[in-house]
Image 1 (tube, helix red, strand yellow):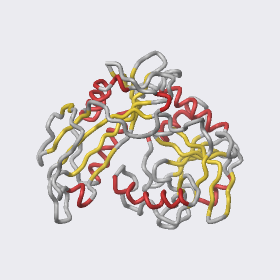
Image 2 (cartoon, one colour):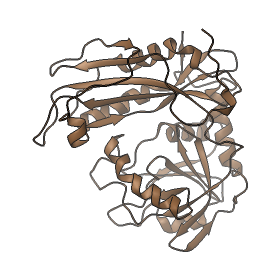
Image 3 (cartoon, rainbow, N blue to C red):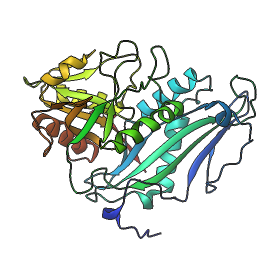
Length: 340
């Protein structure tokens, strides 16, 4: 069927599509799962997800490439990270292949909602798992549900990419030895007040420092940091409480293998930030959001790349990775999974 959507006017929000995937865990094993058109969920008022936030999620996209194929980008890494999140939250991991099969089925069933090449839009996929059975004592639920839905979304940057301003936050994103390294819903709930407060103060995002010493850069809560030195080296912060971004890992590979740049993944002290030439936030939604200014309690750090344009190396990274995703540039083996 033909879907009438003004692809170029799409925002980054939810639009219901016909099909989603659902699988259930009965306390012993997962069923095989299936597609359904039912988008409403009925659970106990005492469900584990409602009482103790026992839930984890992922985010990835399906694209139409330049030659007309429909592909997803490195979904095997999302599957791996979903299992890591589930294990950390005492939820059952998915049977081998179920995650990727669910992605394939949902994209194929909703292929009319995959935006055309050149529109700037994509089909966003949201896999998630939650405790569905009643829990009143503080313990894991016995039963779980895994679901995956799709929604077409517009480009993250409307009207072109513009550098953003961020602030150093007084709030902590994640505790040492906590859950910062997994994609748990509770991590994002904790960040909501901080991001609303940042917006109210005129900033686009927060820069979180490590909770232990508050001297090292961590992430923003929704994206990893990527810095460029004045000598052209790519530097990304390393910490056990940072979410291992698939986009960040891909950009680092692109930097080394496609652009011939030196990459360092190491702890980054906040005092170093003033000496970097460029800064970006990397994640699924925007790929890279360039940062032009960082404010530390009234003290401004203005990146040499400025507030008007994406930095030169940051733009090369952005153009190369999006070129790979859209099929304009040959992809490393296994990075693009074609949907039939």
